[in-house]
Amino acid sequence: AGFAGAAMPRVCDRPRQPNEQPCPLDPYVILPEKCKYVDQQTWKLQESPEMVPTGEMPRSVMLTVDRRLVDRANPGDRVTVTGIMSILSQQGGRSEDKKVAIRTPYLQVLGVRHGFEARTADGESLSEFSQQEEEEFRELARDPKILDRLKMSISPAIFGSDDVKHALACLLFSGSRKELADGARLRGDVNVLLLGDPSVAKSQFLKFVEKAAPTCVYTSGKGSSAAGLTATVTQESGSRDFYLEGGAMVLADGGVVCIDEFDK
Image (cartoon, rainbow, N blue to C red; front, side, top):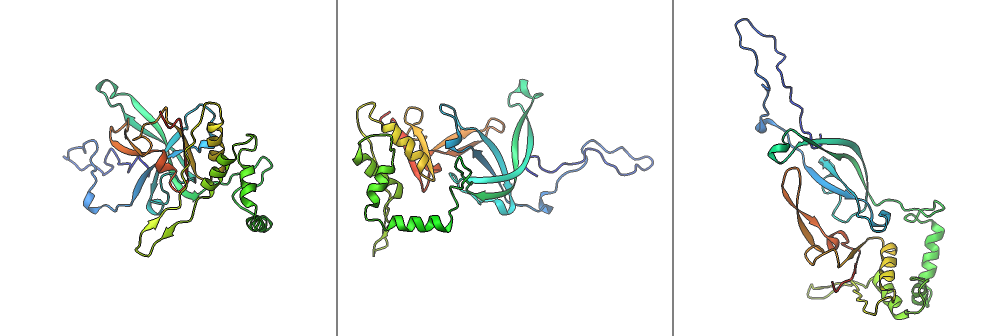
């Protein structure tokens, strides 16, 4: 299971007959045409952005999934994974490192559940709502001044900038997707570009949107290129294989992408 594969016996346990040559080392071989195959995928699980301390890079761990768990999640989904911690031993890539085994930890996935339950400091759930809370949401939606209340709730520590808060409220709730008679679709996404002098709280607004949006990825233009926002080609250190790694635009599919220092 996992990356280790099948464990083959290295010696033959058959009783040796008289005048018979001893079995060589590793006498067993795999017959591919008689094997049964199952689907398998390799995932890369990264810790959520809000749990990463300021100024540090998010950590990640390799996962292996098989059978019914294949394609259960897409890049950018938030999942809760149950699995078995295992170690993968690989030989070094260079000739002088052939005798050195590189041990890489990975997780054999046993179960996948979409989303993870966020809680407040008092232990109350932020993802599951009671019947009373749902009724309060419906009452709030019937308020004719709902837009003003939402605008006042965005970054309340920042005074003024009512037009910016109005735009961010529309961005978080997005527009309505329309389908025309000829089959064309009009996306309802709202894009916001903040321009202004230094120290007018542009980055603070981005940080608030990152924490408020259910699916959001925050990145900076200083450390990413135009190609890095969509996908990057990465070479794996062990097998030296190339694979595509999704960027911020892929990870935030269906959510919000916050790009600071966009002019860089």
